[in-house]
Amino acid sequence: MSEFRPVRGMRDLLPKEAQMLRSVEEKARTVAELYGYKEIVTPVVESYDLLSAKAGEEVKSRMFLFKDLGGRDVALRPEFTASVARLVATTLRNEPKPLRLFCVGSVYRYDEPQRGRYREFWQSNYELMGSNRPEADAEILVLTNCLLQQTGLTKYAFKVGHIGVLKGLLSQEKVDGKVQNAVMQLMDKKQYNDAIALLEESGTPQQCISIIRRLVELKGANTLEIVDSIENLVDGYEQSVEAARNLGEILALVSRSGCKIDITVEAGFARGLEYYTGMIFETYAPDLDIALGGGGRYNRLIQLFGGEPAPAVGVAHGIDRIMLGLQMQKTQEESNERKAVTVVPIKDELVSEAFRIAQSLRQAGISAELEVMGRKIVKALEVADKKNAAFVVIVGEKELKENSTIVRDLAKREQQIVSIEKIGEYLKNHS
Ligand code: AMP
View (tube, rainbow, N blue to C red):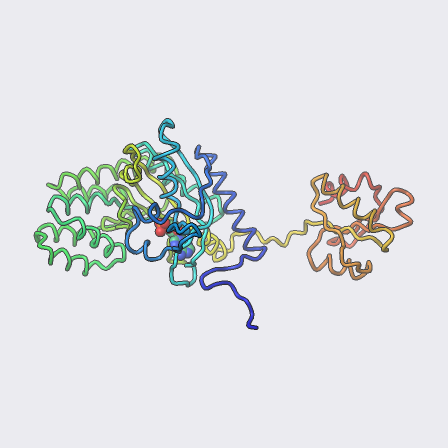
């Protein structure tokens, strides 16, 4: 029989990686609390109708889709936003606005596996629903910066744009909605020439096309100046001018917050998903050249799910990619630190005493492993040392008579007789 392996695109996370994943997840939770986002847990399986309602063709074609035993068309969630929008449109519809909601967990997309691209990956997701004001957009940006900072990542940058600039131009020129979406998707993939060709084909006036050509070139880290240039460039296109001003307000707030964020404004930046209506952004690690997270404003989504119209802005962070960034930047403290305690009975007759002592240590909040392989003491010490244990509590007959054990410090290679009731205290003082 051939060896079993994980299904293509799926991975096992071994202890070190699992620990890193949970640690980033925990930091995401701390940031949620810090900014007032309440955690919700939504199902991994949702109806295909819900998940595909707002998804573009590309996301739809990459869903893990199946029929459940009741014959329903269901899929594994490819992201969290649809589930959150469903809740806000139904169960939470009467909650006072704004709603700040946080979720974290695995999502599934039938992407082509490669480094940083998996079919099962983890996201932390924050949604701020009910506000259309620039402070809400700015909050999502500084929150994302706060999370990346908290994880220990040192090198990351933001790319920010506003979908309203391009949409304003195309709508005023009455470019067909489908063509607009196709153009956005091409621009998202940086296929600018194809996007321009498509616009020419659809009869978009040359003056507008020439503005788009110049927008694509317009980018830089002097954010407020770039925004001014965008505003000048789109003069006469009312919605685009408004979009540029809105972006300016958001960026001014971010800058006023005192957060030192490395931001580049890209006037021609588009995100593939059709539901964005305002500010859009991505954050990436320059060394990795992949997005660590992305988001933006989507004001029509809740309505699409049958709720009262509610403006919203949100972000999803790719936890696996943050982990890759951390591994690359080697900022993660080496977990070589000796921590655990192993309890070893000198002979079989003392196992129950050792079992009891190990349990009392755990009750005192000390991580303790019992020697369960029946190893002799010399071998047990060797194994504990290899596994980086900090101490071995040796349960011997002679010491037990005095209600004591031998506690060996593996790093210092010293040992001392300690009374059983004081082991916890001794370990806490010596580690
Ligand atoms: P999106 O929902 O497409 O905006 O994705 C949000 C974030 O999830 C991205 O910025 C990535 O960090 C991460 N991500 C997206 N697709 C994958 C994937 N196939 N594997 C790992 N992470 C991903």
